[in-house]
Picture (spheres, rainbow, N blue to C red):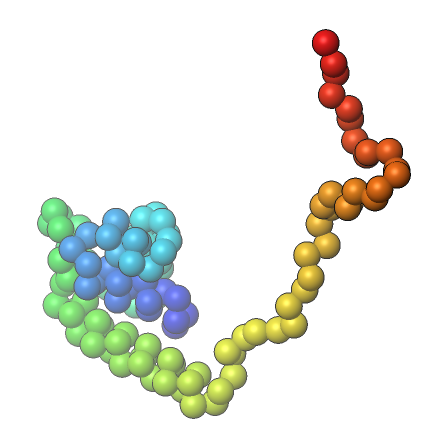
Amino acid sequence: MDITLLTHFVAAAEAPDFARAAGVVGVSRDTISTSVKRVEAELGYALFDRAAESTTLTEIGVAFLDDARRELAQATGHGAQTGGGSGGGKAKANKGKGRAPAVKGQPKLGKKRQSR
């Protein structure tokens, strides 16, 4: 199962509602909801009680939460042990169009102000 989906599920299970879970993870509420629905579709079970006002896990959801936490810990621990994926690269210089420096004795570049 995708690690991103598991991360979204764990955040939704730990937060009081999907909106706060989305804020914690840094995605939209719809993304959290879609991720949870995809996890439920893959498992074939409802993990959340949709009738409740707040985020409430079903019995299967509670059991899966432990498995999801374990799998996330294993995935993040495994990535840290291999040392790969820490990213980084060569920084690039800004090649934007800035103003050219004024040179003494040369006419000023750009549009001149209109005088009265």
